[in-house]
Length: 99
Image 1 (cartoon, rainbow, N blue to C red):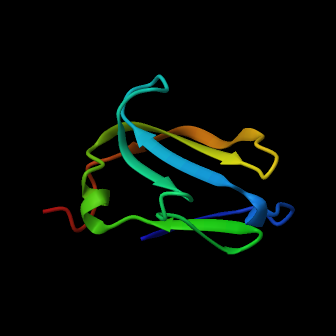
Image 2: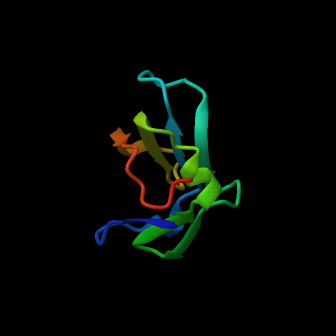
């Protein structure tokens, strides 16, 4: 599964780092279940207006039913770090192909 974050008015080609984390605790600083980063070579910038990363089926199944939180940080070429996206989502035990 590929996740793609797009902003037609942005230019991500100058980003020195982009991180995306998912964790189970409400507060930042909890242990991450899933982490992707530009410098860790787990994220790509195929076009200046978007970046993307993939999640394997095993990683997807590790997101057990319940509430999860995520943050997405971008660092530009001037070392300015900003929060690009954050939030909460819920995984329900209704996935069609769960074993």
